Length: 417
Ligand code: URA
View 1 (cartoon, helix red, strand yellow):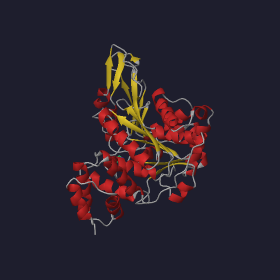
View 2: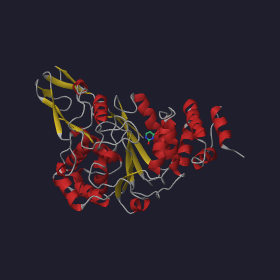
View 3: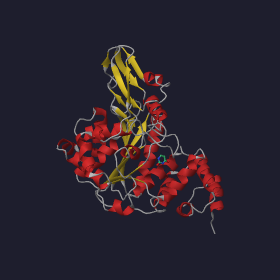
View 4: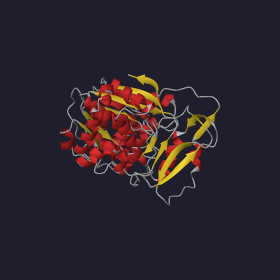
């Protein structure tokens, strides 16, 4: 009879594993010895996973837990993470307003990248831990992965995190796609970010991940496409948890920055929904408000959130204005430096358990391409009083100036279908 040591030996020797091999690993993941999981992740990393193995592992992970029935009209997106990456919070209610069902399972931020769940938790009362029954009853939610959904992914990811085996394309693919497939989706759009503040630094790596995820999604009959997008400059004008919720409300009110709305519209279009009229007539904003209430926010707080966001959202009390040290065009705003600095201040986490300060955030007052005079305010930082600001020069370093206006670059690099 096949057992885990036998599967590990075959993977070590470069053999292709089968569906029953992956099923056995995923079904016994909680009783397997931690060394066996580490060996599995390392053997997959060193020898790679073929396209077929990636599809089989994705399926095994999906069926290791609960899943929703696949139905027409169920749609979602996934982003590989960036700085100022807040589009899910705009997209989900806007898609719902356009008639879609949006069962969005989202994650927390790690390192310099923010997480949708952390951002939503800056709204007083917002419950990001819905039960399966609550998810089933809702036509639009954003919640955390529960213990019931793709448990094999949670166990394997925890192992990968401590064994240097996170950055393997097949393992990343199966981890992401198994959770999305559990949502019972008809369509999925993937935002695969590429650039200095992205998980994938080069276009080649981003394309490889995009192609792998599209193939794995299709193997589970999901209509999936990936958009490879630039992640060198922060998205939108605000970075930080409550700050990004503030900007999402602006987007839903039709006042979102061009680059953010470009991404949101592109994602909705890829899913087959025109959300523009729903942003314009306020129904998308209404869906956002209703989603907040369904997920635990008091009705009065939800109404205040829409009418005057900063009356309910936390904002750190100390305001530091960053002034331009020269006159010229802003040629670059380094999203990685900004993300890392925000993370160090306490807006992001460097370990799984770390607590965040949702009120820490940054407003960028001029986007790349703007002309500014020396001494003009280019950014406003909100931090708690008493916080160490010795690394504030990092913030200045993030802005670069020049005498020539840089060419506008659209966020989209390419689409993979
Ligand atoms: N996000 C996931 O959910 N899984 C990975 O493996 C990497 C990023």
